[in-house]
Amino acid sequence: MPTKVAPEYPNIVEIRNHMKKPVIAIGLDAGDPVLIDKWIAQGYLKNISKLRQQGAYANISNTVKYAGETTEYAVTEGLWAHFATGCSSDKIGYWDALTYKPENYEIDCNLEFCGYDYQEYSPFYALGDKYKVAVFDVPGTRISEGVNGIQVLGWGGHFPSAPTASNPPELLTKITHQYGKNPVLYNDIGIWWDKDYVKWLRQALKESISLRTNICCDLLKQESWDLYLTVFGEPHTAGHDIYNYSQSDHPLYPHLSKNGTVSDPLLETYENIDLGIGKILAEAPEDAYILCFSLHGMGPNYSDVPSAVFLAEVLYRYNFPGKVAIAPGNVEVPPPPMTTNPIRNSWLGEMWMKNYEPNPIKRLFRPWTPSKFLYGDQNGLASPYALIEQSVPFGWMPATWYKPLWPQMKAFALPTFANGHIRINLQGREGDGIVSPSEYENICNELTQILYRLTDARTGKPLVKQVARTRKSATDNDPKHPDSDLIVLWHEQMTDVVDSPDFGRIGPVTLFRAGTHFNRGFFMVKGPGIAAGSSLPDAESVDLAPTILELMGAPIPDYFDGKSLLKIPVKY
Image (cartoon, rainbow, N blue to C red; front, side, top):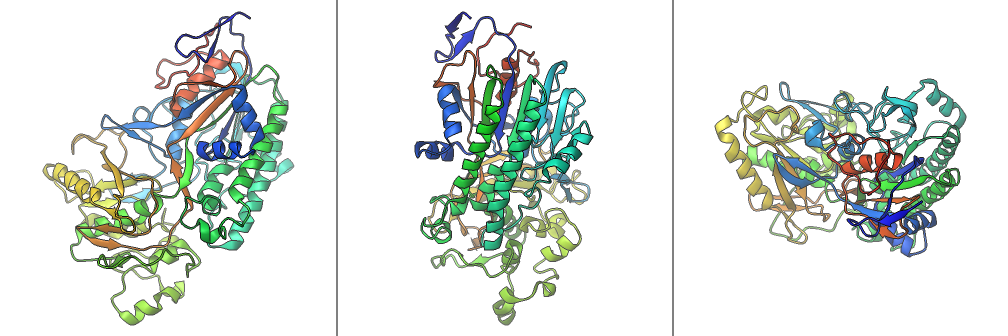
């Protein structure tokens, strides 16, 4: 086949007479490229290493536009929608898993249906009768009628934001009967100091990867697929829950790993995935394009505590001058050592005992008080034990505890995992709004400056990287905007205690999940016409759908925000 080097990207081979080839695409949900590169250099992950050497590679870093301003973005649910639709959040109107209802200050998050609904924009692989497609366990998706083939969703993964379903409907039942249920699905809710949970998780991840690999191989062999798309969800769970047992850039690593003498559970998970990829590729057609990708990575958890605790408490103190709730501290003294041996058996228990108790005797015994005596509100905050009993979404998260006070507050923090989210309690929009439209701009500016003054009490470094506005004015009510008025991006540094020149110290508090999303992913591809060891231009998640379609020889919709990374002319 005559070939030539494409002039735009001199390392990529352009194919003049591109014939239709099968595409095998394997995603690693939250697979981290920095960890992968490090482990490859150390001689691990041989199948992924071989794939990278034999093909082309691109770095992935994602952005969205808030009120026209480009801002980095690493929200899992949103990125899987970007991947599946080829469109960014500002076009599809989907940003996050949580839904906020301004008329009554309620929040909602249906675990199976909190992803994008694909009503306006279909998945890129819904290609109709001309293409045979198999989709297995891709997060954040729905069953699409436009897929000629099979779809299996929600078999496994880390809270995959997808219904547990299949098309044909009986396929999932057959898979479950033959291979069993995924042991991790909706069960990865433990905490880092629970040694029994960590021990269980290591084995559950290993079992999950093994079952997933067998299912993938079985489905791959059933048909000559034009596209076979699957995702390993295990890196996401492992990154969130056991990163601190693996990586020295986590402050708890020396304690949990016993200074590196304990075997690395995160590396073990990646190695098992690498073996699974090898088995899947052994079943792939020889002329297939092989893809491996991750939309974002995972690193030490710099965002959960600032977004779920510090931000909510800062806004509490802003709205109620002179009052404190969670973890008041003394800015005049150095913070005590970081907590390595928590008392309570849950993070919500650890955090609720930090709610200020003025009575010194009660304060002394509060850490050991049985939870059955902790159902009452305190400092205006709702007890997480009561919220969970009432099935309030995110009832365990500290930001939700302030919810009874939201109608009285000028601004409050919505519950979230990654970036911080601030909602202005606006008249005419919120059910009991107290901020007039004329005050909106000043409130946003005032809060922005307060946030930029926050510092890590241990290092003195600024905590906030960026505060992004999502609306150009108080009356900007485009339904495709995020629920938040302000998005807070944190510097990628972990801390358990923060100082504010405006409101004093918050913390120390007990750290939550080990890892969080980092805005770094990767894409690698090998196959006919792809030069070994070559580089592709830097990309975003929206670029992967048009790239896959081009490899398939399928038409690329004009409405896509993404562009193909490859220069391969397609003959239809």
